[in-house]
Image (cartoon, rainbow, N blue to C red; front, side):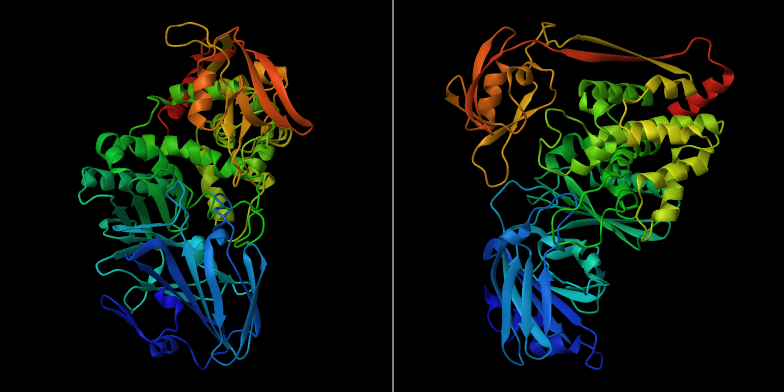
Length: 606
C-alpha cells in the first residue's frame, strides 16, 4: 500500500507526481474548494486499489460519502479499508457516521484522505470494478467519495497505473499524462474507467467522436472488430435520429471480455461482451447495446423526478421506470430493426405476440400497476409477494399501445418517436418527469382525449391492458387461449414455477413464487419463506434445488420444510400441472385502406 504512506515522490512508467505538482494544480488565490483524486493500481497486488483525495481551501468540518446507485447498489462502502485523514496544518479528527458517510474535522484548510478499495471475491457484472494482469475497471461511485454539499465543485483525478496500460473513460483529458477532469462530483462518479491493454476504434456521428474500447481476457481478438464497430455506428445513427440531438460531447462504449450485463452512463456504457459471444453470435449483442445506449437519453437525461443527482442514503425508488426501462426495451427492438441488424423475432408482429404472451403468463402484470412494479424493480426479489411482474415488459407494451393510439389519432403523421423527442426537449436537462408529464406530452402529440383514459386505466389504476382496443386502431385483433404446459414430447409437465434466491449476507435460500394460484402457494408456501429441505434433503445449492424440482411429475407428493414468521413447518405439496397462454394476432375482417396503411407503416417501423 505504497500511497498510504506519506507521499514524497511516486513514479510509475513515465508518470511523475510530487507534492509540488499537487499544489500547482490548485488556484492559490481562490477560496473555492479544490479537489484532486489519485487512484493507484499495481499488478503486484490485484486484490484492490488505493485512493487519495487532496483538498485545499477545505472547510474546517466536512463530510465524505460514497454514493448509492439508483439501479445497482453494490454497497462498496463495505470494501473501504485503512481510511485515514491527514491535515498538514495540524490534527485531523474523523469518524464513520453511517455506513457510507465519514465525518471529518481538520485544523487549517488542507486535508489529505487515504483509503483502499479491497475488491470483493464475488461474481462480477460489467459495471463492477475488477483488476487482473491485463487491466480492469475502476473509478465512478465504486471508487471515489465525494464532499457532501460540494457536488458542483470541479475536480481532477490522476491514475497511477502499470507501465503500458491505457485508459478509456468519459472524463475529460488534461495536459498532464493520465490526469482527467470532471466538472462536478456527479460527472466524476458517473464515469467508469476501463484500463489495461486495450483495443480501440473510433468513428464520428454528427461531428461527435465515439470510441469503442475492448478489454480482452487473452492476448488476441477472435471476432470481426470491423463489423462490430460498423454496426455500433448504425445503432448510434438511428438513436440520434430518434431523439433529434446529441446530449454529450464524446461517447465511449466500454466492452469487457469474460462478463455479462451492462450499465448506462451520461457519455459511456460498460457492457459485458465475451470474446466467444462476439466471435460466434455477435448479433445477440445488438439489442443490449441499443437498449443501454438509448438510456443516455431516456433515464440519464430524461430522468424520473424521484431521482436526485447524488445520494448516499437508501437506494432511491422511482414510479417512472416503466417509461425509462420499458421504452428502452421498445426502442432496443425498433432501432435495431431500423439499423438493419439482427433481432430475435423476425417481424414486429411476431415480437408483439411474444410480449403479450409473456404479459399473460405472469399474472402480476395484469393486477399490479406499472407504477408499483417500478417502485420495487430494483429491490430484492419477492417485493411483489407471490406475484411476478416485469416493469420492462409492462412499459414496452404501454409504449406499443400508445404508439398505435398516436398513429390512428394523427392518421400516421406522428408516432411514439415524437413523444420521445418532445420528452427530450422538455425534460432532457435538469427537470425530472412524472407519469402526468408523460401523459401531457402524449396528449400534445396526438390531441386525443382517450390519452387520459389510457393513463387512468393502465398507469394509475393498474388495470389489465385491453389490447384489442388499441390493436384495432391499426386493423389487428388478438385472441388468447390457454393450454396445459407441455414438455418437448408434448406431454403435460408439473408446475415448476418456483425459484430460490439468497439475500446478501445470508447462508440460506428463500423461495420465490410467481402466482398465488399455483400448487405451491395453495399448499401454504409463500415468497420469501426460508427453504430448509425437500423430502428431508437439505437445500444447500441452486443446482440441487432445481434438480429436485424439475424432476417432479404431476401427482408427485413432496414435503417442503420452510421457516415462516411463526416458526418452522413441513408443508406437503401435491404437484399439479398448469396452463400457459397461447396468443394469436390476426388482421380484422375487411380492414379499410386507411387501417391497412397504418398497419404497414407500423410493421415497417416507420
